Image (cartoon, rainbow, N blue to C red; front, side):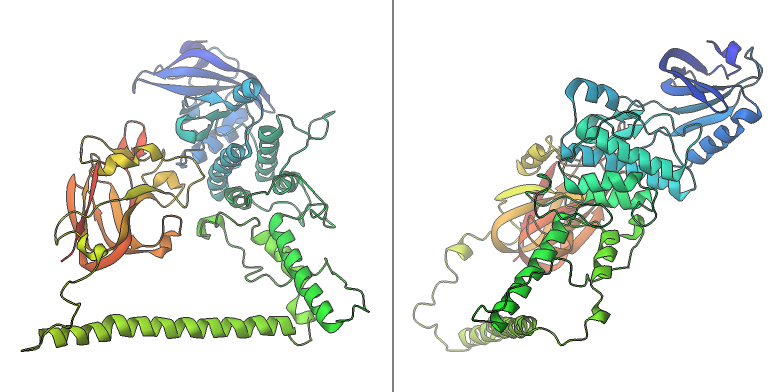
Length: 550
């Protein structure tokens, strides 16, 4: 088909048809890979026949999608009705970003189901993109394995945005079907299909919730699905449904988090029963239908306002509301149990002891050390025996003021990532003394804010021991990237455990000085903003030098 047949602008030259004709309630959509002659790039071209009123809703939906910028959905470059042409009724067209990669349908056909971690990441990223569309009132549609493309670097994109029609509930159900297909290679919601077996109880329940039309058990929005998929199961979770995987009245399997709450309550009940009946005359009753109240139940927030879930949580706030309903604190009129009072008293004692120790350490480090220095600096004073040297082996190995501190080791710090490596093997290049070798982030599409997928990524440097530091010197080949230099924390801790010492927009080689010396073992260079490149947005670190304080 040529532009004279469809009435399309001459700038779009169809190259080859990439999908079978799609029959819709309003007409037929044909899809091509085409060449944009003006911008000299490949695009995805879809033509709807007939044009006119039949295609007007589709064009309106495409114009709405044109305001989205998310790597999970192909961008809309152009949408309009053709002028002239020989097709009966004319034609309308939508021009999308052309996405290179492997179709999910081809990947499943050649290699079978995806591992659980990959399936979670794929569907979560799609769900996050669909959530952005739902926020502007657009149901995406077309969420099929033939339209999902696996991009390089672990990213995923959806072709043909938007479909001719769709509903938000339909998008949620389609994402559930994709999750089932990725995990099992089959779909159980098709006519004549056999039931599938998903080894992870949490994911099996999520697929059922995505398909459910019952407001009490179904997913109310796609943001909830994205947040559930972002949470990683604890080790051992997902091994299958065993005796502890109780089935709730709504037909869903209890998750690992719920089981742990039940088991904890059972242990407390059993202990109380043994204490109240030391001779064993009364049977011990384990009530598995009562749960302790869940803090924060009922405070559901949208995904955009919700902080990233810790990696070891198993349930979202929706399930928390269900748990709270099963054990209302208002129904428990009795006094707190003796075991709980004992735990509370022990906790108070531990806290008091910790405060005493902290006060003693502060007094010793600050008051006594100052007094000792005054005694040694006094006129005519002589140092006591054995105090002629200042410090032991650790202090003798400390670098001189202004000298580079030795970096013992380093690693990528990515607490908000989905488990995909962030060029981890390149980290040693940042302190090898060669500014021509670099560690770089992955490339992100759509936004310099890591594609709106996470707040940042960085490298945490271990100096081997606590040292007094004055600042750092950073060298990069991507001027314009923004960073924070943080201190403290641990390599496997949270971002909030590191204190911001300084921040900057990098210009090439930057000497960043702390407002005052900082004593720490760990230094985190946290990249907060990327710069544009040929493949999207990224940043790099060529050399990182930590400077000792006097």
